[in-house]
Image (tube, one colour):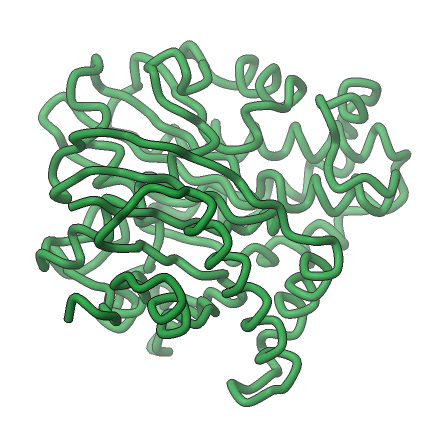
Length: 364
């Protein structure tokens, strides 16, 4: 199938789009990719949605206003790709993620917003969406979703292999020599660092890591963060973008200088990733890093110091680190169409190999 994958991550920076030819189990061709940034007003409103998500209802007028603008930006991304396709993989924007926690009897919940029916109408294509809900309803974490695609793309690479995605939240996929998959969120990544840069400098993010490289990590702030139970908890586990907000506020980070605060957040991200490696059955031969965080020299340097194995951007494998997740949702869309599993016990804690997603649009 010819698919267009769309991804809007927890960094809230825009829509990534990618054209992929795939049957869901292999990739034939990779076509054009692009990123359409969100306008500052939409980005601010999406952040407000994140902050208010636990208290707003599905009929909230502000929610409807945001969803309309968000969906229109996705329509623009599909049109801008310009290549014909049969199927769209539409992740939507996560505004609340509360999967079932170990030892809890409370049902899990995950909420991605976006109007799939409107996207299908305006593009004339069938849309695969709602990728996470079935997994969460079955007791899984609903995240991460991309590991099965990582395995497809890394078929010829030496293993064991770790693939790290640095978005608003960081997640890792460990692929064993026998194809075994283990995947989970490692902790905060660009999310709090972007928030810090915005408050400290007015910039949307720490461009080229300049702020963090000018500072020193504060051990007094890091100590309580390093004791957070998340780091020791075994996978499967996944995060909401704001799950560490309280811990960060209580750590005393707000009293740091702009540079030292950025350096401390970078160090904490690297500590979280190093802690994640303790859950691997054996060390990877290398770490391949995707997502916007790989462009931050301070973050890549911290990861290189924290991890025993080589740390490289995914471009060394011939991949596009900016488009990888959008490409993955193109592949996942084909898997939804064919009823193939999206999640597995080792990636989300699902009770078995779980299909998921829903379809809307003219091919139906």
